[in-house]
Image (tube, rainbow, N blue to C red; front, side, top):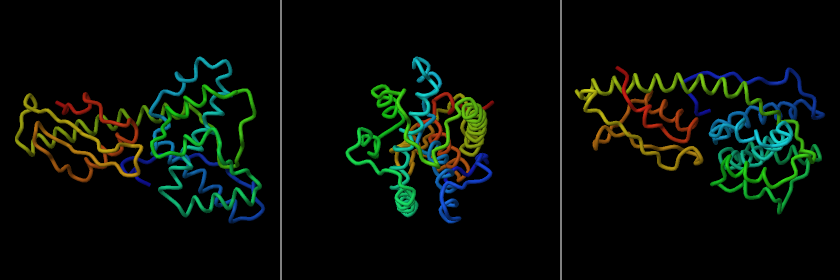
Amino acid sequence: FRRVLFRSTLYLPPRIAAAHDQASNFLIYKLICTLLWAQTRFGTFHIDLAVALQDHATPDQALAWLNYLESVRLTARIAHALPGLARDMTALKQALGLPEPHNSPFDALTTPQASITDSLRLLNNIDVTSDVPQAPWLGTLRLTEANAVRNERLKREKSELQAALAQLLEEHNTAKEDAAFSVEVDGGPLNDATSFKLQLGDQPIAPPDHVRNLINAIVHDLGEVPQDWLIPED
């Protein structure tokens, strides 16, 4: 998918037999992978979820419900980005006898503007002790592991960006004390494409591909490029 700088590992079940045929079970594998990708692509971890859930009386059940709500939101984003896969998912739901809710209280999550904040808002208005709807591709949210990987990646991205900006300063014959990089994100990670403008002072800069990919990755992770990340390394 769109993350091209760093390799990540997706942990999948060794065997799936949720459907009666090999093609359907393979499709379930694809859906698991796509939802995991979508969590990063569309901002599931833009908020510290452990902190967001800590006041729930039953945090594990709240996390299970949040996982479902995010699957509703992310499935809508996948339907827009990958319509063929979305059609396959709909057909698979019908084959497995899974309900396709209409006029659901969760419909607000299917709008293009919906974010993890909307999922958390809905979570606070439902009975989290009730049974969570199930599907064989939902999996679980494992916050400790996800945060550890994300934090390590962010540390690496910040370091690499600051090194890349130092190189750009050399190429533009600009002293560090005169440097003032800024990034203006157009649309941001909730849109299907991220575009941004990199400037040095009031001068626009066309970044090389590796810097463009790096900034895209940071925006996907954080929704923005923090200003202190735009300080070139010494």
